[in-house]
Image (cartoon, rainbow, N blue to C red; front, side, top):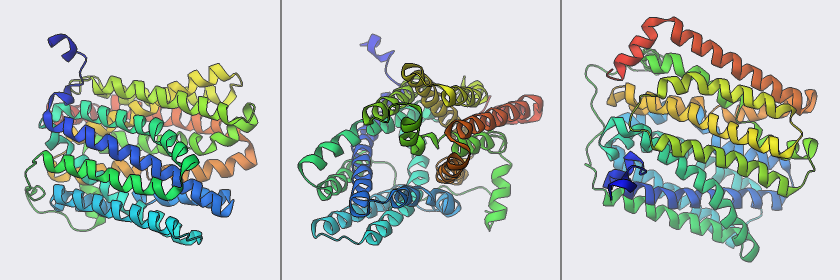
Length: 416
């Protein structure tokens, strides 16, 4: 018995987190099924690449636009009831999509409006859910392992969900994909209720809470992890993530343009991210995280530079696996440090700022990369993006290691 426990992610030793993992996995797979089906439906109705891109933009841009409000909600509202309410809203929106598809609504604006509402709900769901992670694992030293497990779940969903969606779209219609996603929310809601977390109000901060966006931002920037680590996450969100929406064009211009090649390259990135998530999930604490957040961004930039000029499929797959792994390590290790180093009363706002920095900047990065790709070419665009990430990583490493008070402040905030 003791032998297999050595290979069990530390967070999974907690019964509550095992419940959360099971429910969240079902919900994530359902979310990917819906995302693929919605994109397919929009493209089938319009044959418009622009509207396809707009759908993805609406699903993600609200992380950036509503981040401050979402963080305040996560910190000042009762977290468990708020998360359950958001999940109910998301399930209701999925039912709405299913009804629209079943009755044959062909006005794409209706589907784009629902996509925007889903984006708004998700912008609030992420910080509220992640503020509960420490309560679920009951030990802040297990946050790294828990976030690693969450990343594993995301990548399993990314691999399994689209495959299920493809089979459903062949045999049935988009409506049944939406129905399946609506039903999947029962798993995470059931898990949250079964955990019997205390239904307490959000934590009360010591001292007066600042009013206004500028005052809140001033307090947030006083935390060393926010001030010294998040700028690199912004660079990764802007310049590393755009390879995903550019991938169909990359396959066409760099390789043979076959869908099978696209599948191999995306699978390689997913497997790399999954391997990195597995590694993070096995970490018992925060011992290696500062080194990770210092070195991983440099790896992201270097690997992206190599991928920009690779025209050999096996080498490109290897480079994309490295890219997926290094991006995941950089952003998840930063997320873990943020959650472990800030007071509980500020955790929601810090997580919202993190989601703004990464998920919120990704749509803007995709638009910038698409525009540059048309004018400068894909290879030059990817090279420029890689170089900017390397520069940001070097600057962040210099700031952290050449300002002793920054490193000492970060270590103090981690209780070391």
